[in-house]
Image (cartoon, rainbow, N blue to C red; front, side, top):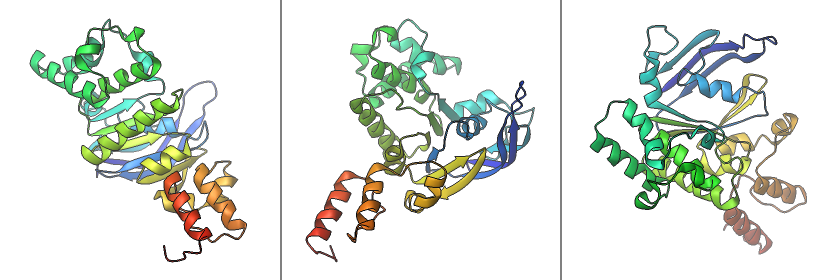
Length: 285
């Protein structure tokens, strides 16, 4: 098992003493694409920061590749090399004077050779669709917001993590930027077989990209299953004040009005095909 969370509770030791997580049990295997949803304060960000030791739980244990990272003897630097975390608005973490230096910062700290560092920087810039020769010597602060975000993600990918965790990576991006990001995540998952964990408030993003959806509420996991299984729980999601993906919502409303359509559809293309088939009376299409 890649990541194991065993009976974890976490209380922030501040003036409010907020209990962010309550007896969480969770297993994540290699090759999964996990989508995590829930309102602000549900515990999503706290949960994913457990995975590379940025947060040590108040009680319980977290294991990565079988190693208990809550043990004081564990080398968390090594853990963080295997579990890469991209925070919301990661471009705010850019600090070097050139794109190359920013992306190379992590690999350099691993003690890699200059040749290996250059190879990695070139490789990940290609992954995030930034031309190496065009961008390597430019200041990251003179790039567009979408380009800055891709530089920040490239910096994490340059560490070659086993798991990539992204906390609201599409926040603030325009539709074109969101599409580029989605295409990158599909490539990392399907072609490079990387394990991905994505926090997003965009249900369409979660439904289309992930293989498994976790719904959190008040520090607890309340739903856990495939997108089809989770988004079939329309009433439960509405009780939690969470939306269905827009396409799925439309299909539910059409079904309520008597059109016998499948509701577990998450893309415009498949929904359009389903509606046309039913309007034509093609029950077996």
